[in-house]
Length: 458
Picture 1 (cartoon, one colour):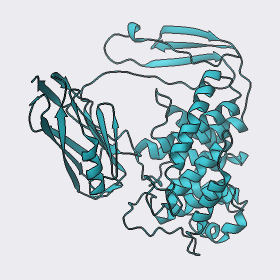
Picture 2: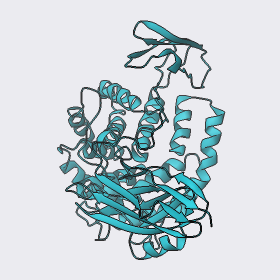
Picture 3: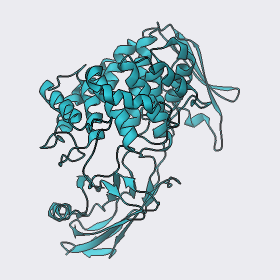
C-alpha cells in the first residue's frame, strides 16, 4: 500500500512531503519482508515454506511491479518469479497447484487462472507467450462472477484482444445501483465489502481505457471512495490495494486543477462547522464535532463550494470497549480460559485457547489474537515446539498479544492449545480481548472476554 500511496500522490499532482516521506521510509523494510517469503524452490508462500503458491506468487509479482516505479527492485528476483509462474502452466490455460497441504486460497481454478494471467501481463510478460491462457479466458467471458470477469477484461485489454470490449459490456451489466460489483469469490476468498471493493477496483481498471464506459467508471469510483475508512484504508490489505490502484489510474486519466473553496458540515439544517481552503492546500481538513452533537441519532451533511475536483471525505467514530461487539457474519469463534485466577510470583498458570470454524465451509488463513495479562510472560520455546508439531503455521508476540496463524481451518474444525504462562509481576492485570477472524476479511471478527490474573508476591 505504501507504494500505491506514492503513485496516487503523483497521479493527483499532490505535494504532501510528510506523507510521501513516511511512505518512502517504510518501503525498504516492506520490500525486505516480502522477499523474505520466497521459497527455496522459488515462488512465494505465506511463511516461505515450499512449495510456492501460484495465486500468492502472482499477488507478489504485482506488488513488485508497483514498487519498481518508486523503489529499487531486484530484477533477477522478478524474472525468476515470473519464470516460476510460467512453469506452472498445464498447456490448457490453467496454472496448477499440486500441494495438498495448502488451502484453497486462490478462489478456485478459474479465478486463479484469470488473476495469474493478469499479473503476468501487468508485470511485462508478452501477450504472445500467454496465447493459450488468454484463449481460455475468452471462453470464460460469460461468467456470472464479477470479480473473475473484471480480471478477464483487464487481461484481455493488456493483451490488446478485441474481446475486451465484450467483456467490459458484460461487466457493466453486473454493476449494482450503488456503483459496486459483487463478485462470488476472490483469490483471497474475501467476502462482504472487501470483496466488493476488490471486484469494483478491477472493474474500474477494465473500463477506464474505453470512454464508452465513463458513466460506469464514475459510479464505481464513488462506491470505492465511500468505502474508505476513518483510518484511510478500504478494508483488508488486498481491498485497499485494489482501491488504490483504481483511484491512481482514474486520477491519471482525469487529472484536473484544484480551485479555492469552502467546506461546510451540517446536522440537518444546522451548520456545525465551516472551513475555507486554497487551491494549493493539500492537508486534511479536520472537524471535531462531538461537542456539538447531543446523544442520539444525527444525520450529517457535507457541502463543498468551489474546489474544482470532488473532495474525498470520511467520518470517523472512535470509542473504547473492553470486549467489542461481534460481527454477525464472523465464521470463527474463539475462547480463552485461565485455569486459575491467581498465581504465585514465579509460578505458572495454564491458558487454554480454542479456535473453531462455525461454518460448513473451510476458512482460509484464519488468525487468532490472544490477549495476555500484563503480569505474566509466555516462554517462546513453548511456541516454537508447538509450531514444529504443526499446532499452527506461524506465531508472533506483539506486546501483550499472541498472534497465531493457520493456513486453513476445515469446516466445523477446532484448534485447541494449552499454553503455560509464567507469573512475573505481583498485582492484578487484565489483558486485551481475544479475537479471531479470516486474515483477508479483518472486519469479520468474533471476540472473547479479556483475561484477568492476580499475581501474589513471594
